Image (cartoon, rainbow, N blue to C red; front, side, top):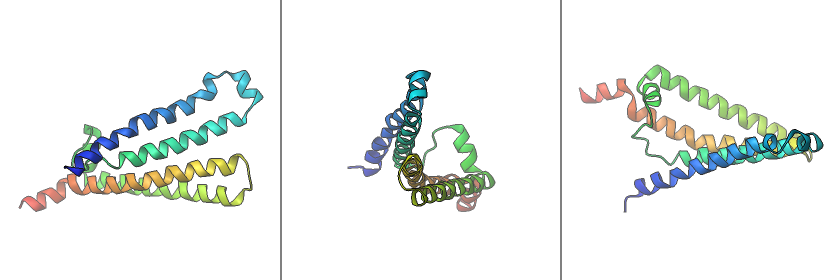
Length: 152
């Protein structure tokens, strides 16, 4: 049994999870502005659900095979040592900001919208940790300067 292939197939669950996140992002607007005016908390409840499903989708995307890239843009980024390092640094900064904002919001509020949104932001940041690991592996697998040294 090829476990890499099994995880590759499991990683395709990222797409329905991202579609669910997209659904929760748009449902407050599709339900009508009158309903949104009557219940403004509906927007934040759905946004929290969207963040949670987005974090789950991103975490499932980290199960992909890191020896392959999905498109030419990602190949262009991961082959270049400079662009790859910039992408990894930006991901680290985003994760730290999301975790920082999520933790501050979670521990500084009692009950309510901010506490709920903080949970969604924390789940998104945790999902991005797995994605960061995959990005680092892709960078190591596809770097042109590293492959040039190994072939000599």
